[in-house]
Length: 250
Ligand SMILES: Nc1ncnc2c1ncn2[C@@H]1O[C@H](COP(=O)(O)OP(=O)(O)OP(=O)(O)O)[C@@H](O)[C@H]1O
Ligand SMILES: [Mg+2]
Image (tube, rainbow, N blue to C red):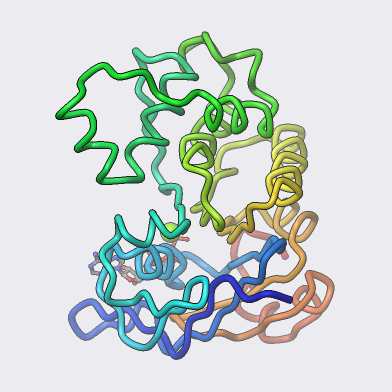
């Protein structure tokens, strides 16, 4: 399988705290990879680290290049996309406009072009493609306030998807979805992968993660405690111990 992302002994250190502690993780092309762990395990710190929003130690390889000293916008331009744990949509923009802004914000070039050519017409094809993959084309002209919570989550993912990344790292995209919405969201994730975009999925929704991922990494205190297929991970004693007494119900 073709390697897309690989971290080698990657750490994120805040003060004296190792939020991520020497983590080796790999995402190959065409794969949907889960990253789970209890609250505070270091999942968001890991995504912040690979996408360039926090300083890291160790190596990060993306599409055959070493990127750990590259600024965030250059990693984004290479095709490393991410979503944010606390999703803020632009409430007075339509769904389509939210995706347009998302596509542009991934690149500094987009900002600069806006400065020299304000109001220029954007290429609609990437936005239309993202709306279509996510099955929300029929909502394009609606405002975020007029759609369901599950649909808002799809718009959040669509903003990153519209930049046509090779990899999209999603931080708790299913938070707050009910079971039906979560199942539908899972099907959309598979469609994204079929459309050629690999996914690193961080979520506490075990039904979603175990139902949809090809492989899963489990971390605790920033360290990998298990890696394998969903079935292997669920059966792992260390994983069961890490989740004992949590609400995740593995
Ligand atoms: N900016 C920061 N400065 C200092 N410590 C931080 C910072 N961000 C996170 N931490 C700490 O790093 C550890 C890992 O946090 P992180 O947010 O990465 O965990 P998480 O796995 O995403 O948790 P959750 O499931 O609750 O989102 C925690 O102990 C947290 O308090
Ligand atoms: Mg987090």
